[in-house]
Length: 310
Image (cartoon, rainbow, N blue to C red; front, side):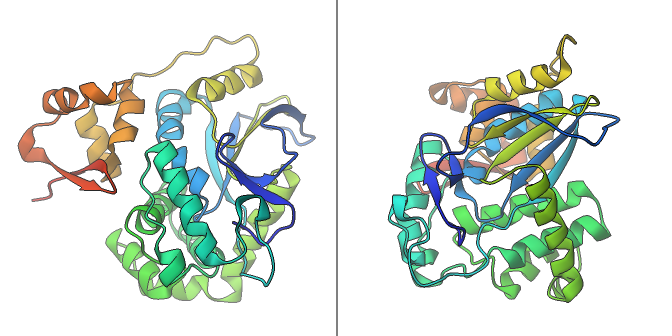
């Protein structure tokens, strides 16, 4: 879903972007890097970005010690226009997004309701993107990424309109920050300036669709991976930018520690992180999580887990 021309959202490749975009390719940058940087070009309302969260979390958990992770806002939807937005998927107006989102959710098993796009549609992805940039500016990258996750949960799973200030304030307050002040700052010209800087960076990286992940090494060489890719594809991309250096994966932290860190995990995310078959998940949960430490709930046919706070 975007106001940019010639975009398609493809279920098989997991990319929202130009139809001719390569899924993986070597690229060359002219600015030297002291360490490997992973640029994640994304948008709060990108359904395929929501779909890759299980794989991306596992990849960063096991190989994040090799790179600096930098999230870049790409600007998927400034506003709705008259006429086709994504004709390849039959998207001409906000209500057309709902079935596409539901299809992505069913395909990925990362739940997406989508009915708000009929009843109370998101008008722009810029407001939640500006909030990301303000939190990043005033706090840390980690806090900004935490916000991005909470915003996506609110939008996709819990059907909340994250283009509305009241919803954004509630999300930010829930993180223990001053939602009113942050959203006020995001709505000022300075907030848009921060966002525009990310747009410029995304263009300089050659990112045209979402999600795009670009790994750049100290020799100014990089790998660009576009769309929903497998865990092995990200590992292979990292190996390419490292050259002959042997990769060593870290063991994921215990599920109890990961759940405490993340606050909410869907069944699919646990299955991917720990390589657990769906049929074996109940036994794995029983083994790894004491019953008094977590709650299991269901939404849109999928289970999710949250820690019990005392």
